[in-house]
Image (tube, rainbow, N blue to C red; front, side, top):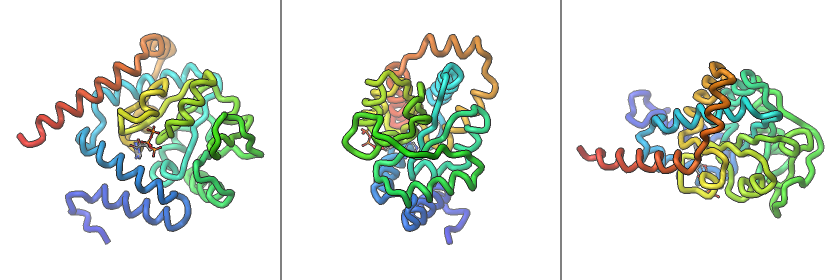
Length: 243
Ligand code: ATP
């Protein structure tokens, strides 16, 4: 039992949840390492959504507005941390939700699907095909889901798949606390923020966005600028750290 007045209460509760989800087979053990890297970057941005993250979240919402067939791609960590936030995002945007895993097994797909459905999401199902040119199993996706999506929102995306989707002409929006990852640099747009903070920001921005604002934000999209701004925020945060 973690005492609620522990200074790192939230972080410890999340670790406990991820460990439980790993024991249940929802999160891959490698996912725990990915979470650790993210925690370190979250420390560096001050464990809050920065001004740049908020700006990027609005651009992400604008891209989803303009998309014909947006699909949210969910992996084990995303489902373990943010099943409710994914369901809410789908409710507001009407996007498709598909489970797509690097460490894929039918059992893990079923567990993650159940977790999402319990949160209220409708999950795409069917026979997956190798529709993305990758050697590993993230190539497998549904023809009516990621296979035909013009926009893939892939939080905690991996660099390979991001590059492959971009080469296929798809718009890729990612949420990644590491502004230096290959994914962050190759995505159409990266929201440098923690998943459970970023998803509601994108959802709410989508809800209140006018078509005019969406057009303007998409026209001015500049991922490189946003990544540089995110790095500048980390540097500012660090320079104040010991004040
Ligand atoms: P790349 O191939 O893009 O360089 P990577 O090898 O660094 O990525 P992966 O393990 O494929 O990373 O993916 C995990 C990424 O997701 C990491 O960059 C990590 O910082 C990020 N991440 C993990 N958990 C969260 C979270 N809760 N919120 C935001 N980002 C996260």
